[in-house]
Image 1: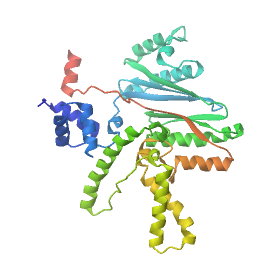
Image 2 (image 1 turned 45 degrees about the horizontal axis):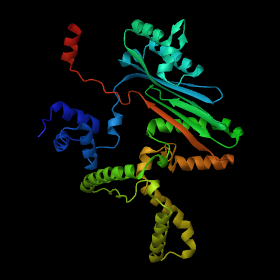
Image 3 (image 1 turned 90 degrees about the horizontal axis):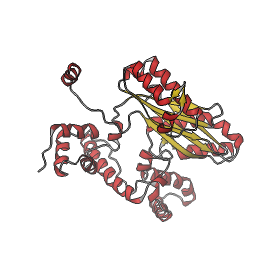
Image 4 (image 1 turned 60 degrees about the vertical axis):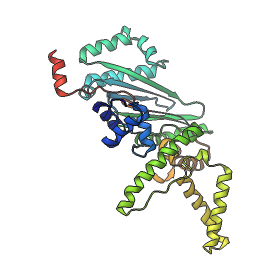
Length: 355
């Protein structure tokens, strides 16, 4: 049996929020492989989906710049070593200059940004001078640029703490409507900042991905049901489907027929079925698209109107403007995504300083 260190158990616990003994058992089962242990815990319903992605380590800020006509947006993640430096005026000035340079140039990568001429030298040299001045390592980690195509609009939002930034681009058919959508687009960005969708729609999924996620979701719900049952609370429904991608016309038709049989058995007059069925079918779709609600922008219920999904809100806005409005691009940066900060005890830090 592979030797499982306490540090490895601790790391898995931080990634998954599972119990210490469950983490140790998972690591033993998979021979100490951390990634496999995460999946093992998910399949047993012992780990929350996307918990790993929630654990952000790096400091710094997300900077954005939006053109006055809402046709072009730039966003950059700029990392520092400490939150203290991220809040000082020197770092804020560096961030402002960096995002302005990205917006005003044709660069599309950090590598291209470093070669640009800035204040008499390259941007890379300017950054080095600022590092020496501020006294801490600073890195422009990544940039994103989105431009509205044709009859479209793009807007962005950065959370007040500077740790989350979002860009969303919409397309419509009537150019005159684009200018009316600036605030609406920003509201969608605010939603995405809070709710963390990973992709625009379920079209980004494939059936193999859905199959693996279904196993984890069902295990998670069954595990939660054990506690709900103990507390005497209503139990979660265990879904047969978890994404719109699974809901074929045949499945929806079959569900409709099943609902009609239920209404008939309840003695409901057939004349009122058409008033009842749409709501029941919508409920079935909501119960059968839990993965879309977790991971897709269009499948999530809008934070400003939680009775409607973003897809339904877009449909309403399209109807209001007599247009067809679509989300065509979506970018979300969260400070430190994917960066692992090395853990050290206070004694180790002191020893390192004295050494």
